[in-house]
Length: 212
Ligand code: SF4
Image 1 (cartoon, helix red, strand yellow):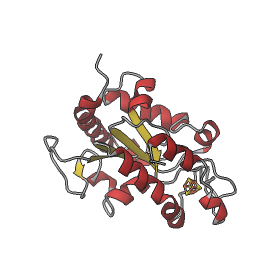
Image 2 (tube, protein in one colour; image 1 turned 90 degrees about the vertical axis):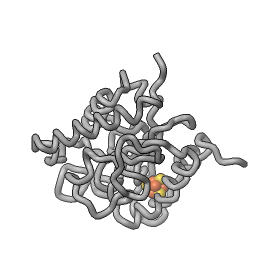
Image 3 (cartoon, protein in one colour; image 1 turned 60 degrees about the vertical axis):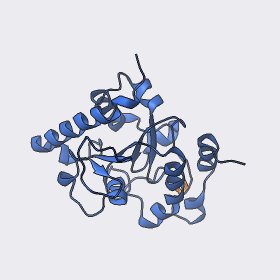
């Protein structure tokens, strides 16, 4: 059978690799998107609410992300969710972090187990713009650089900074994680970088927005 996005989603939603390997008590893969999406957003991993609803970016961080996407040109949440393919480095809720209220960062082994799913999503969709949200996504595509050297810039798929006029595709647009746990966003100079990143994103995605 020929692989398509809906078939791939069925296979991802049935995945239990991390349960079999003993990393998770239960699997609840979350993925959302359509075969015609030109913009892909890659987060870290879903949270508890996302797992319960099986929809990415719910809750507080989802609200901030939707505000960012509105500033990037998506007029409302349903348009953003229809036109932005939303996935993550690992697709199941990793559980809470020991000794804190935040979510556990998925281990390198879990990232490697989940990696083939993201590889297949990228190969099938071939997005023009890839929005990288949070540290694990940055590490996968633009490793070894501090957030302040990523946010506000646009990169080629080989990791070189490029101008907005580049014709090379895909282009990578890093954003910080919208979680309230990120203190990076409290610094006004960092919020300026986010403003710049959203201005860049607005210019890059306008060709892929629905025509009104
Ligand atoms: S995190 Fe990825 S590899 Fe692990 S069970 Fe979920 S979908 Fe499968």
